[in-house]
Structures are given as structure tokens and as C-alpha cells.
Image 1 (cartoon, one colour):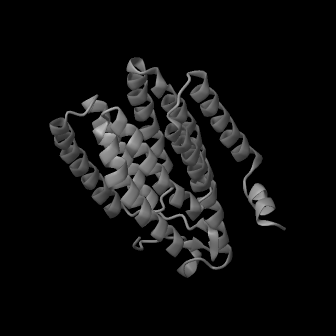
Image 2 (cartoon, rainbow, N blue to C red):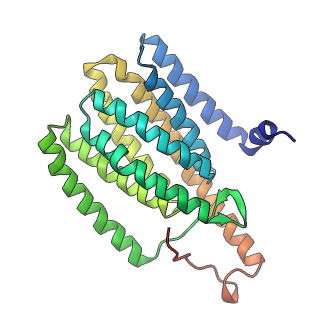
Length: 250
């Protein structure tokens, strides 16, 4: 079986449909409004590929997330969304690198194409909450000084972006919930940008598609979690056969 044939079988019909519709809608919107900023389109298409693969727990998706972060940072800078630029290039991209390393270090059952789903302890959830608050407050004042457009919404984007990136690096299935909330914030952010410049409308369509992909990602990672725990239990799992949080580092 060729690698191309294996890839087509790797994705389910549902995943192909979501990916195909997202791509078609974004391309149609891009050309319908005569947009000539092709890096917008390239960024969106890379993002779709990344999220489809991330929803499968495939580390290649994390590599594409790094590339998307750079494209998105450039797009954000063009409209004065400095919070988005700083967040994605200065925070999301580096965390995505850490996530890629973590995913490669923790394959499930030796399969490089699927990461082992992790569960966070109560203590780590507390640390996560404290870090989220600290990052959000710090960025609010930084973005205010920079004169960021739509400051409040941009700050909310920082919070949700950090939460999603952290949970992705920690291999938690709740990463998708963080990104889904972030998608809603970004839909609002780019809708406001589109009111000033219609060429930004494809970004709204892009993040609507991202929302669908992230919601699917949560559903699929929940399935992965149950499947992996079932396999571990069948093999004896943890001591006494009871699944436990990984409790490991990145």
C-alpha cells in the first residue's frame, strides 16, 4: 500500500467531509471578494490540515500548527491586532514546538501516528488556572500600551489561546474545548475587522471552519481516550488494572 493510499484511509469519511467543506467555503469566499492576499488563503489551508491531523492525535498536525502560527501572526499584524501577532508568534508557536516534542515522546502503544491522551491532576488544573490568569493580566497591559485594536476581545483571545496551547502540550482532550472557545472569540474579532475591510471576511469563514474542526477534535479525542484506556486495561494497564493519570512531564 502506497503512503498516499494509506493517508486516504487514515482519515474517516467524516473527517474528509469537514476538511473538504472548510476548504471549499474558504476558497470560494476568498475569490468571491477579489482578495489578492494569498498568504491569507495559504494560512487558512495550512490551518485546516493542521486541525484535521491534530484531531487524530497525529504529531504532524503539531508541526503544521507552528507554520500556521507564523502565517496568522503576519495577517494579524496587517490589521493592527498586535495581541494576536504576539500571542501566536511569541506564545502559541513556541508552545506548539513544546507540544510537538511532547507528542513525539509519548506515542500510544508505540504508534507514531497517535499520541497518548493524558489526564491532568487536580493540582495541575490549579497551576493551569493560575498561569492563565497571570498571562491574561500581563498581556492586557502590554496590548493596551501597544494600542491594540479591540483590546478587550484581543485580551480574551490571549486567554483562550494560552489555555488551548497549554492543554495541547499536555495532551489533554480538553485542548479542543479551549480552541473552540478561542475560535468563537476570533470569529467576533475578525467580524469587526471585516466591517472595516471586507477583505478580512475569509478569516471569519476560516475560524467558523476551525470551530467545526475543534468540536470534532474534542469528540474524537474523547473516543481516543476511551479506546486507549480500554486497550491498556486489556493488557493489564496500571497496577491492579486501574487506569491512572500519566502525571508525566512534557
